[in-house]
Image (tube, rainbow, N blue to C red; front, side, top):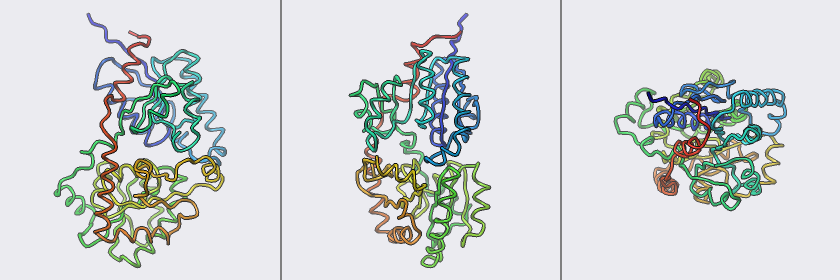
Length: 389
């Protein structure tokens, strides 16, 4: 009689994009069926749907910015202690942490004390700021999974094994739609061929939404004076749908709010342009070849700290990959409705949009196919970990 080996994996994510990565990893490991699995950790809707037993809602630690972190410190400390207790009570075969380094570093220390192998997914942006973080990370974890092909060379000189496993967004079929699918999307949401369809993406966290919604509302108000045929589409997470419906009910034109991943990708495909906060979504927009203006505003203290350590002239991922501003960036004091309108105005021209689409293809070309997947790397570590039958 064959006994299936069961592996215990503690997997933790601290933000929506990490939740998607974690969900894909759980699904891939389960499909490969090298072992049976017990997944415990911290995740959101996607990871829980994939089979994770989450210790607490991921939103409890999805906090960005220096001042917001300070104000939520007691809550964060409670979450750290709860996660540590879970690791100590049932040491897993493998710890997988995804992004959110400030929180995950605490888990790394506990796992190190237990001799648990540590896999971290999403490299800290040492090429953007604080290069010395590469040396510190090499002392804390066993293997780093990177989203971009240019990242491993920044870490291997410090003795840290780093593997480019690709970005989930780099699955081209995700952004390939037939003419019929596009037409049906437009019919469903009342978008006509004479309208200028604009995707607005104000963020995935409440603080981001609170900061950017008033700015984007005024931007829409100004745009309507120039483009009365404007149709605004607002993709969001399901958990923010009602909140955004309430906050946008008095906008000068009621946005079409969508919350499914497929609808979001279709929106990117049919829109003439997008206005988005800086983040992973800018890479999604690049793969959809959607001309995009990037905006971001944080609290003044966090902005001052970032400016002191930032080593790159860009913040949007497509711009960093190509080292040129194919997506215009408007940050902090430049994140104003008049400047955003001026940048979006350039995309009224179909010729300009075609030029930007050509440039965005270069981003796609840079993201070559990796030789190993995240699940394959995880299995390599699990093969040498203790087995529980």
